[in-house]
Image (cartoon, one colour):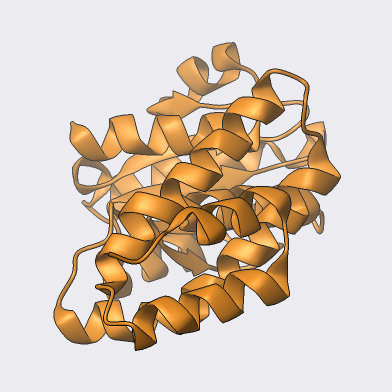
Length: 211
């Protein structure tokens, strides 16, 4: 039985070289890639999220843990896909039209990936049409929109309207976030969920996928 704690610790501590090397060693020893994901990598990122919410970890720690997770995931992902393993869900994510801020969006994408979701990252300045096109082509079940400027928040509403016009609003859950975004605004525009931080976004996405 291969000890998975070194991988868990490497992700938790944000040690990228160790995360990659212990992943390779475990696979060479015959450990199932799904086991590495569900019993070491995802629990480690869940603990990172818990520490963040407890104010014991901050954004820099989140970023380096996410980077370590991503390094291990790059090794494991092709094997998971080849085995037909299903992700927790598929998320199309992007910063809305007119907004070029990406640090928060990148952090949420990394945390979601660490939580077992497949990510389609559209980048920044994403138009409503591009969000809709990505949903239609990827078959994603969640759309995650970010805005850091109050002036770009209306693009979130426009995207939801575009989903309705395309006839796919009922096939996808919409979650939003960003510094000026609130639960009240999410309710106003008809979004399904709101999160004010990256670790909370993982919990929200899991709840949406379970519906």
